[in-house]
Length: 216
Image (cartoon, rainbow, N blue to C red):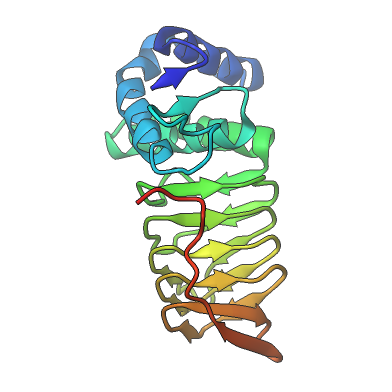
């Protein structure tokens, strides 16, 4: 993978960001260096499926730490990797908070985002403890959350457009799109549907067109 910073410099970059924002206990490079290889591998695999020259240039994945969408995905992968490998939870929490500070993305380190996903301008997006599948695309101001402590399940190739939310006991089929500013609560969508509206007034249209975001 082509990286804007070598792994060692990227590790130092993250550590400096954490220590400059959280003063309680200094983090050392060695505290996260053991997790960097796995996090970078997860980034490389994900980006290799994105049909965009800034993520994949035709021959290899591309990771620029100054590309906001890319860096916020990396911070999630790093925090989740540390959590899954039973690392320091305080570091996971700081990475989660750093991601909220820098990008406005609320994606807790315990949630299981898929191996292949994409966030686009993630400001004010909250991704709760739903069940996610590959080729998930989410834009700004979107929400995945609970209703009566039940969370949604999303199939493959689900796209959430700006301002959309899916809540509660909802099952979203494969290749579904949730239109901008739309809201789904406690309902299911079959495969290949476009949902527009809210629980009181909505429209369903057939959607057979796959997103152009992905290589498959």
